[in-house]
Image 1: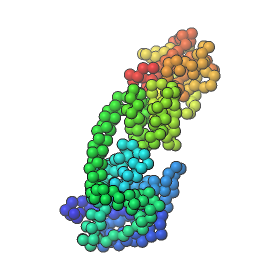
Image 2: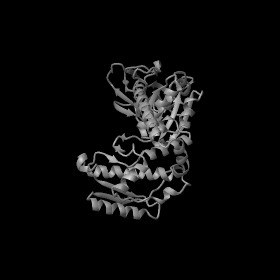
Image 3: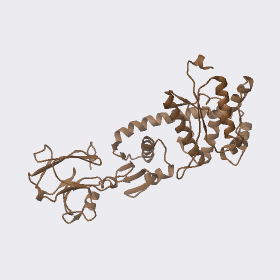
Image 4: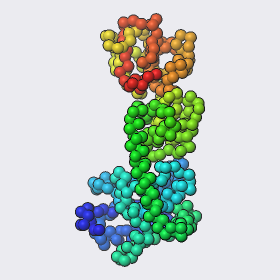
Length: 386
């Protein structure tokens, strides 16, 4: 249907990745078609540079979608329509199965996915090509699609013909399978989202998740957190390294700024706090990582009163800190304080002598009414007991 029948305004966007010699030819073809059909066009050539650990295909996709969203925002468009079709879907599912993908990989693309729509997804490649020929719609072929050294092309030219001998309507069959898998995935995501809200706390740079007994549910909660933080799904092996570990603490780096860190009954997903802070103990309110501390010379309801000494400071832990004869680290372990929180927790200290620990302990020999301190916000609260 045309734009009049659909009651839409159309705007074209073409990105030349510059990865093959004929890319300029394709860009010029798009320009001529848009000029002939009177469709506004945004065209650009961008050199694709890979990030660390990223394949060329992944880098090209990242750059392409970044370009499309930039154009969308500039012109005030509602949706980005891309041309994936049923044969693309089949090839992607087969490729992911061959690489050992899990259930998430069986739903590689959706007809509607946020601001992305795929109106051609139910149609096979041969159906689209036949329509173009019958209606005089010009098109060009990417000759690199014939090179079977690329996995997707190998599937297209070597595997798919064999599957069509088994079932000539294999794309239709796979699309039906895809729709069932998508419905199941959406149902699971709904349940996972509800469970995530019950079990998680949003910290400054990630999520703290109370571990369920079932390892599969835990893996889904971790996936959910990763997707909310970065929009990406972590490798299964990274999740399994955490969920299957029998150690009381297990830490795995997923990406540059995302770490999975299991400790006691909790899993942290995000960027752990690794800074040092230190300030004089005086009146005021302080934001210290995920903690909010109030200090006052007047009595505070629910606060702790301390004797004042000039060298008292608020800080996080340091090597050699002690509570009496006990190491601070041993105190945290006894209380089952997750390892990923220990560097955040505010202390009041006199040298290496700890006299107050947020929400957990204070030195009774240091009680007084000179200055009061209270934790007003803390991940150690919120109905979660330590």
